[in-house]
Length: 170
Image 1 (cartoon, rainbow, N blue to C red):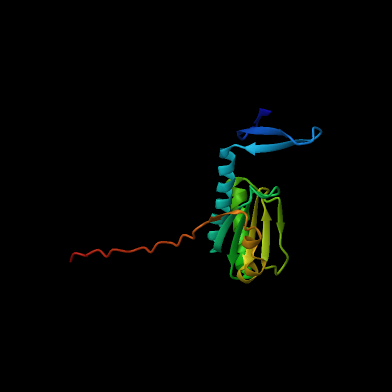
Image 2 (tube, one colour; image 1 turned 45 degrees about the vertical axis):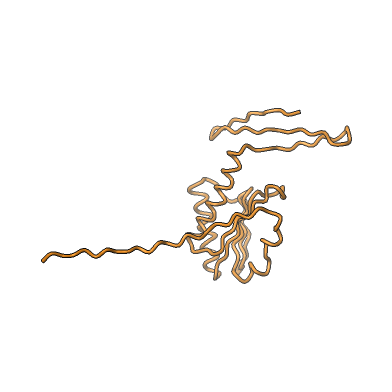
């Protein structure tokens, strides 16, 4: 049995398909929500936006883990590294500020201690991990979640500006 529900909101209108599957026991019914491809792409775009905000503060080795197929608590992990504690704080601040101001999404939670070398920012379906380079190797979240799809984001280096010299007429 498949039904289509329509939800409307003031910001945008989204459609959710609710799939009802009968389990082997006649007493149990499992309900699973399936989002439309537009919603999926929007969430991945937000994860990529978090990476972009991190790269603004020179974060290193960005990777996005797509957890949709294996996790129920989050859809994406964004993992980046920084080389010092002040840089870790700057990267976290950049992500928080840009998500709040440009996307209108404040973090649900933020976890870090003074002197911490790992900051976690929870945006609901997207969880951002900012590690010190040494600590990232120790915890190795990429290996822990190796069943996930990895989206490698290339760091764009600023192209060199080649200045052409102009001949000056005398």
